[in-house]
Amino acid sequence: MSSYRGPAILITDEGREFQVTANLQGMSAGLRTSWAGTLSVPNISQPAEMTNLPAGRIRIGEHEGAFIRPNIRDWLGSPPGTFQITIEGNGDAPF
Image 1 (cartoon, rainbow, N blue to C red):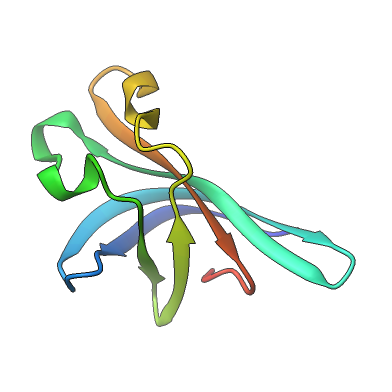
Image 2 (image 1 turned 60 degrees about the vertical axis):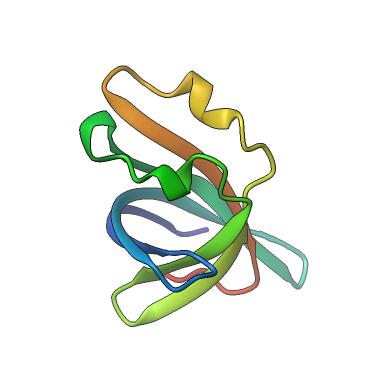
């Protein structure tokens, strides 16, 4: 199991890119691999595109991975001063 906490780039379906902080964990069950975690930005720099984003891509270094966001209302539980979303990806983790 691997994990990553640090800077990343969120890429929307429209190709827009945003700097985020990723906190991700890789998982495996037999031959199946997946990864999940959170992407966050300070409230004052929150891009409007993140609010209702259902899916996207994340880039860490030279690696990318596609993700879904199972609950677009998840940001309501964000820590104070932070806008945070929860994501899930399948396959090889981008970290």
